[in-house]
Image 1 (cartoon, rainbow, N blue to C red):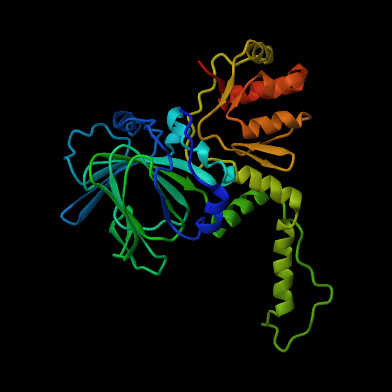
Image 2 (image 1 turned 180 degrees about the vertical axis):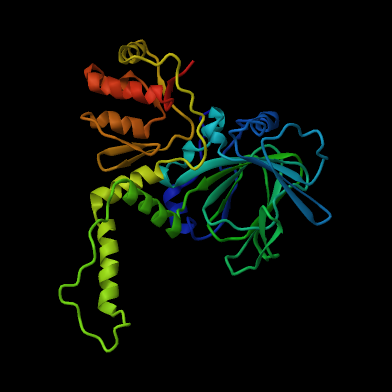
Length: 373
């Protein structure tokens, strides 16, 4: 389904993005759920899919992790089933991500879908990333508080909540409504009836992740071999002293590695184009030969990008799931990065280049693009 989002993006960025929460009433008009509760439950039974079940009874919270074998033991109230990265496994649900592409692809993370019965929720909490919560079938009440310091506690080892807060938003959401919540704003949602919610989450790497990732890149590529030197070592009152100029010299040795634009860009492209969740990769058997790719496109077949595959661009280089791709046909790289579906028109005369066909065959045989039914 082609979902059309009713939002003035420049105005939204100026007034709300990472600033204030807001409810967008009927953000999706005539909203139709891309997935049913039974389909969601089926995904939660798969080993590769990250899912959890959260329930509460008389103030006691329970969390269990999938894959699940059955849901027959659950009652009719106070539980939620949450499934991560559904856009990786369910193409109709992945279509919900595309209306948000006004925001850069590298910032988008995944689509989490929850099904909750009356009273179901995960309790008051806050996230360290932006999220758009789309209301599907059913009604759910959402409360959002001001961004102020709040004490956190763990009512269960796998559940982090915050203390009660005063609401600046207290809204009953209906199908097609969207709640945007910036990082750090406490919120809680409880279903008023059987309901489905779709959460488009955004990726915000922290300093630890970035430094750790870059350190791995340094080791793998044997970077940073330059050593500290001090040909004019200064005198000091006591040999135990480390002088400010020496600390600055050590910092410079470290920063000089980061300030290599080519290496830094290569690392970040590889790092940020990798998905945090498993992909539904299914390489074709037998593998495609380049001439078969050519023939299929000429006959009008289209190549569809795998759900959840991260395809990002830095300069003239395209990064696909942690690997860089270059080509003498920049318009083809642009099409790979921009379009979810590729047809003959996207390639043009470039299809006559054997090296490009070989690249396409490699991508298709990796399971990253596939020919639709």
